Structures are given as C-alpha cells and as structure tokens.
Amino acid sequence: MRRLLPLALTVAVACVVAGPASGAPALPTASCWTPGGSAPVGCAGWFTTDVTVTWSYDPAGVTATDCDVVTVSADTAGASVTCRVWYGSDYVEAGKVIRRDATPPAVTGAAAERAPDWGEWFNHPVAVGFTGTDATSGIAACAGATYSGPDTATASVAGTCRDVAGNTSSGSFSLRYDSTPPTVAAVAARAPDANGWYRAPVAVRFSGVDALSGVASCDGPVTYGGPETARAAVSGSCRDAAGNAGAPAALTLRYDSKPPAAAGRLRVETGSGFTRVRWARSPSARLYELVRIPGLGSASRSTVYRGRKVSFLDRAVRNGVRYRYLLRSLDEAGNAAARTIAALPRAPVFAPAAGTVLRAPPRAAWEDVAGARFYNVQLYHGTTKVLSAWVVEPRLRLRRAWTYDGRRRTLANGAYRLFVWPAFGTRKQPRYGKLLGETTFRVRRS
Image (cartoon, rainbow, N blue to C red; front, side, top):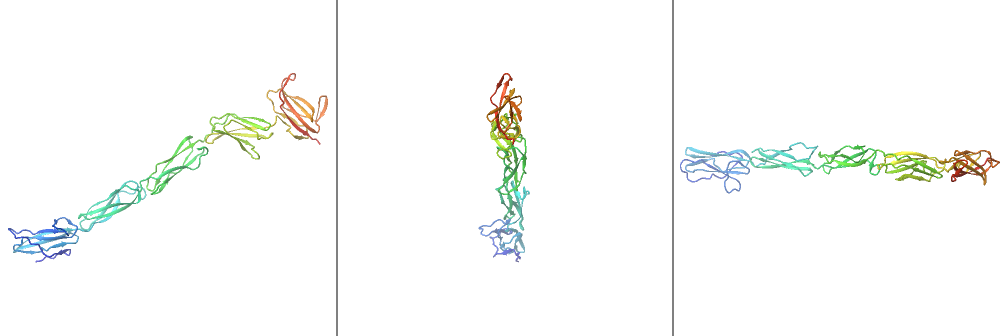
C-alpha cells in the first residue's frame, strides 16, 4: 500500500531497512538530512534548507508502506511525513512534522522613537525601531539602533528583522541630524561717533553661520541708549534649522550721551588787529573747539582753534568788525557744552576810523583806560597843532570852529592826526600815561 505525497514533497529511491527484529515490533525511526550533511540532524525545529527524511524499522515479517525517502523543498509551517510497517495483520506507524522556512522575513517599517526635534531635523540622539512580517515561521524579533552622529543631512540607520526559523533581513531609515549650533556674531549698525564712543542710541544686529542645516533665525536688533558706561554689553543669539541655539555673541561698546561741564567764564581782550579769548579749564573736557562768526575769508563761520589749551590769540580779524566766539568743550565721546562771547577788535583810538574821509565834524572815541581820571586829546592839521583838550569821558565831539592858543580855528579841508593820552592824578598835578593811540582822517567839505 503506497501513500500519496503532497506536491511539496519529493519521493526518493527507497526505505532504509534495519537489522533483524527481536521481541515486540518497534516503531519506525525517522532521520533528517540536510544537503551536504555527513550525519543526520534532529527533525525537530525549523529548517532553512531542503530536508530529507529517511526511515529505519524491524524487517521481520515486514510489509512497509509510506516509508519512502521524502525531501521537503518548499516552505511549510508543518508537512507530515509517516511510515507504516505491517506485521501480518497488525502494523506500527510513526510520523514526523517537518517545518521548513528558507525565505527571509520582509522588513515592513522603520520609525524613530520620537518626532524630529525641529522641522525635519534631529539634534540629539534618537533610537530607530524596525518592524517586519514573515509568512511561514513568523517574526521572532526586529532590532534597530540609536543614531548620535555624525552631523549629516543624509544619515542612515540600519536595522534587521529575524524570523523564527533564523532567517534575517535588513532595512534602513533615513534622517537628518545636526547637533552643532551655529556661530553667532554681533555687529553695530554704525561706527562709533568719536574715539570709539557712541553718544546716541545705536542698534546692534546679530547674524549667524551654520554649515549644515543653515541659520533659521536670529534675535532682532537691540538698540542701546544708556546708561553711560565704558563697557556696555549687548548680546543675542541665532538658531539653526535643526533648532540648535548658538552661544550668545556679545558686543561691548562705550556709550556716553551726557555733555561735559562747560568751560569756566570766558574773557576776551581786543586790540588793533587781534582778539584774545581765554577760558577756565573744564575737568571733564578732553579738548576745546573755538568757532568764530563770521569766519575766515568769506566763510560765515570757521573753527579757528581745536586743542587742549585754554586761550587763543586771533590775529585774523579786522578792526571794527564785531565777532562772536563759540567755545565748545568736548569730552572723549564728542559731547559738547558751549559758551559764547562777543568781541570787537579795534585800535585804541578807533573813531574816526583811520583813513576816513569826512564832510562833517567827527566824533572821536577811544578805549577807556582803567584808573584814568581824564584824557588829553591833541589834534594836528598837517604839522600844526590846532587843538588840545581835557575830557573826562573817552570820547569828544569835534566842532566846525573853536578857539585854541588864542586863535580861532576851523575844521578846514586837509589831513588831520588825533592823539590821546590817559591822565591820572588831578588837573593841577596830572600824571600822564603812555600814548594811548592815534588816528588819522581827512576833511573834504567841498
């Protein structure tokens, strides 16, 4: 009697017959062989290659059925192989279930244990797990890995799945990884106002550089406007597209918006063709700047001095022109405090102005001399003295006619010279000072 085999089974040549039987009949014994094997292996468990089953049994009075050599060459979750041995009208039967799975499992999925840290990027270690399926023996286990670097936009994490039969398959999971923060820089929006100092609010901007994911954002500009200090610190940071925050960059700047104390009281001395301006030193001023209005030449204003001294002699002036001097006391940051003073340079005897041509009697005037009780004024027409007068005020109105030295004098046409001396003491006992000055004029009445 011969048993029909499943399509998955291949029948070999014949059964293997054992030696003479003794006593009760014994059950047939199965042996399993794998390709190239020199000895049988156990028939339990899973095979990942073809497996051939052979039988041995007691041959005395035996009529064996379904004991063919069978090779299982297709995957199966359980193929039954049997052997029946007859002893007359009785028989003994043995069977084996052969399980074969030579097909690796399918890796069907891979996933990170958490979402990306920022956008599509991971910035610190992340574990990746894998899943799979197996149609025959089933999945025994899948293994992944933890990725912690290096930084790259094309990181790949490998994983495997193993079925119960021991077959394995591998898979991979792609991710973007950047754990390196950007480099941050802080830059002022403009140059210092003077000598490395800012004296007006200044904006500080922040920028970054990131070699991989790129800079996503930076802190907005910060405007510094005080308090006054030589070491003001303004800091900010940038973040890359992976969410890494760069170490804050700090810009140290010097800020002073308060002007120094103004220089002390201004004093001015004037004379013929010069003006001297003096001032008291300001303890917080670094230098002084003196501006004159009107300026040099045809300029409306000119800076005539810049330095650390506390006086300035201006010889580029014209007699009879009124000037205004603006003194600016500057600190190191360029803040300024200002004072002004007016000056009128002129000759000691300034009226009538030297060289003036007149048609009417002039008014003579001169500088007041400190301590003088009165003045002696002498007028010459050509080389002839025509007037000597004593006056208390530093001025004298000439007339068209007067009497001097017993003679009547008139303001005739021609050239005149006028001299002035200060006098001290009394009229009876005068004490004359040095000649104060002189002026010249011409009369042209017709």
